[in-house]
Length: 257
Ligand code: 8Y4
Image (cartoon, rainbow, N blue to C red; front, side, top):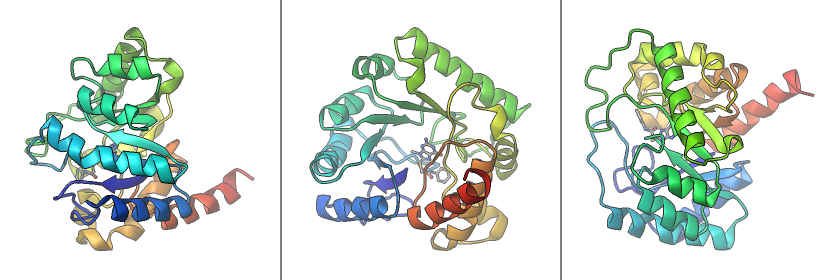
């Protein structure tokens, strides 16, 4: 899954992809590099960020989704927590929902169930504005696993097909570097019967551990992605598609061919 941020303050793309043409070119290049899904997000979920109105988010993402749908043959994922945005995005051609809030908003499960699309349910402790203040866990792996199990059960009870559910530990969302490392090391315990997505790309854990700025985190991101694959991840959410795909292909040569 290649990341296409459409926010003015998006943490790695710096708002460079606001125009539909620029976004389309970026998405095309990620597809050429091997991305099978493009994740379109218009609601910043950076630690400390404020929320965005439905109207603003729709203005940002709908023209992009329509353009991607018309021009390239990839699955478009809508990265949002708002049911109204999910609904409009699916009408505009999105084929998947990626929700850092795990469909907890009122009405979100109904939208996903009615449209019968894959959903990624991510764990987050707290909310984006405050989640990095002082996250504390008794047992981070057990707590994240229980949360994901409960959200998956709620989704199935609400009519979402169990084969459409993907789970994600939410690296960096209310987690210190130590929590992220524990989750990555124990990723195999987190999915249960569901495929696991891992989003580690360029995250602050790398800055913290290696002292690198955002634009120099590619190699460390690929290394973390490989560990995630080795520990059972089925989907990777990344900025640097080409380097990640090369690494995954080498992994497959060793373990899968
Ligand atoms: C620290 C630094 C903490 C950056 C968070 C961030 C994920 C995601 C994002 C993820 C899934 C980001 C939308 C970008 N991360 N969706 N979204 N999994 N499923 N934020 O890990 O890297 S937001």
